[in-house]
Image 1 (tube, rainbow, N blue to C red):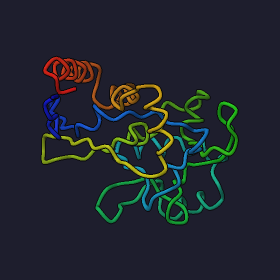
Image 2 (image 1 turned 180 degrees about the vertical axis):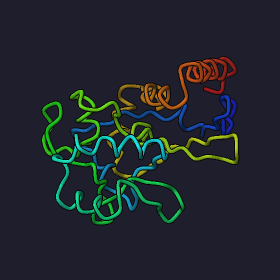
Image 3 (image 1 turned 90 degrees about the vertical axis):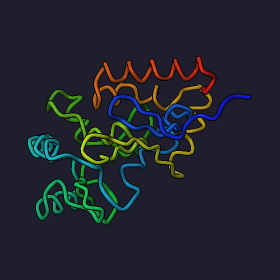
Image 4 (image 1 turned 30 degrees about the horizontal axis):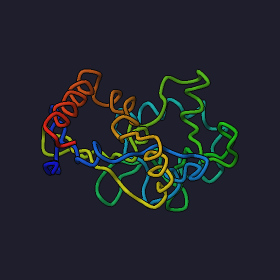
Length: 205
């Protein structure tokens, strides 16, 4: 019998839920159409540095934003502090991120897309989007002074992503390789891969 995998795995100064190593996931825009950008009751977590970057991008993305989103930004800025005390992107009607717009992507119509990412890919800006968006469905939370916790956030919107991930046999940590490297660096990600290799050798995975 395979030994039980510990619920928390530490890699450097990061504590990961073991589900990040075991669960399979791959976004399926043809089904969800980017609903993670519009569902929920708060915006995407951001840092002060990211807020400054986003503010620098406003001229490049303004025309892609809805009139409602423009009004929200005019009144409260690109971010606010939510009920948990976290800085998050401003939202419209209590749920939609102000930087969402609807369009076609890869032949899929009516997708909820990111105006910040659109401007970045067009070479108009140097900032793509908050790293918390790129990391989703992983959520990061600071623990004390020196540790960061990573958890897998499950919700119904991502059912198709779970099915696609299983079909592709693609673990979550591999699907999010680039965002994890963006957040924690190449050396950290290699340490994660070494940890996974060791856990497999010990029969945990």
